[in-house]
Every structure is written in C-alpha cells, then in structure tokens.
Amino acid sequence: MKPTQQTYEELQVAYDHFNEALFDGSLPPCLITLQREKKTYGYFSAERFVHANGTRTDEIAMNPAYFAVCPPEEIMQTLVHEMAHLWQYHFGKPGRRGYHNKEWADKMESIGLMPSSTGKPGGARTGDSMADYAIDGGQFMDEYNKLMQDDFRISWMDRFPARDRLLEAIASGNADQFAGDLEAMGIEVGEDGELTIKNENKSNRIKYTCSMCETNVWGKPDLNVICGDCNVAFEVAN
Image (cartoon, rainbow, N blue to C red):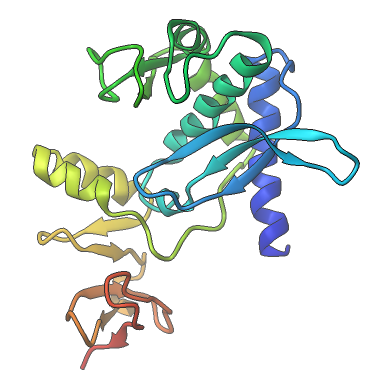
C-alpha cells in the first residue's frame, strides 16, 4: 500500500463509519487533510476546496503530530468533533467564527461526546476553544469499539510528535496516568519526561543520543529518528 493512499483511505473509512452510525449518513463527502497547526488537534473549514468543475467541498484537517501520543479513541474523537461542525454548517446554524454554540454542543452530546472547555467533567459546554470527552456507555464509544473490531488502525504517524500533552500532564501532576496511556500504545515515558520507543524484545533495544542536546531515546536496531529540537539524526550511543 502506498503511504498516501493508505493514510487517507483509513481516515475515509473512519469518516464513513461515523457518518453512517452517528449522523444517519446525512453528511456530504468532504476533503480530509493532514495539517500541523500548533496545539490544534483538528479543525473544520467550510467549502475550503473547489474542484476544476466548480464544485466545492468542506475540509476536515487532522494533526498527525498527535497520532503517536494520543490514544486512538481520542484521534477518532477529534474527527467526530469536526464532523459535528460539518453537520452544523449544512443543517444547523453555526455560531460566530470559532465559537462552539449550544446547538453544536447538544449535537455532540446526542452522539456520545460531552463538550467541555477543559476536556473533563465540569467544563463549560460552549465557548471559543472547546475539547470534549467520551460519555460512558454513549453512542460514540459503542461505534468506536465496532470500528476497532474491524481491525481499524491509523498506520502512519508523525516522527516529530507533539510534546505539549506530556508537558501539560507533568505540570498538572498527571504524568503517571499519561505514561500509562502511552505505554498501552507502545511508547514509554522516562522519569525526565523523555519519550522512549518501546520494543517487546528488551534485549534488542539500542540507546540513541542526539549529538547536540544529548537527549536519549531507546528503540530497535536501525531506527531512524530525528531530534525535533535540533533537527539532527539520533546516533547510536557508545
């Protein structure tokens, strides 16, 4: 499978699944893109693209910098969050630019995602900058689990993952919980906050060091990793 084809086919499969299951198949096709907008998991842009024949389509952008440091259900939450914006644009009344209004919040809750300004219980349901969390026993988690039962996966991840989630977890005292989430995805977090590539065969793990900042990572032989801070390749440590 070609990387471009595989990446976008996987996202299209997820879009089609949630469109049918959560929106009764009412959403029109859109163009899904990958965008690395800092500290942004994704966004919706109405009628952003135009075809050579004059047809317009909406954009849903996903940030691949979070694919390696977010549980897969959170990646799918981002997609559905933006699909709710697409739904509102075509069938509702969106708020002013960037504002998540009550209509959008009600739609989100009806499909099993609780809007929250903090991403946790107790946060505001409406506002300019909004996150969400999955409702226990809600429709989103039911449909997410069905999708994963079909061996769905996001195969390609950015080699320069976003570190703001880790830094926020350390600052809030939730680093241990976050480390557990990452470990479930095959990523370990060291005591100093370094991301470590996990290998099931511990004896085959090799230490790599950035020659400029001396940051260390551990991974399989022949690993090709670049330091996001120094933009140089990690080298096998002596």
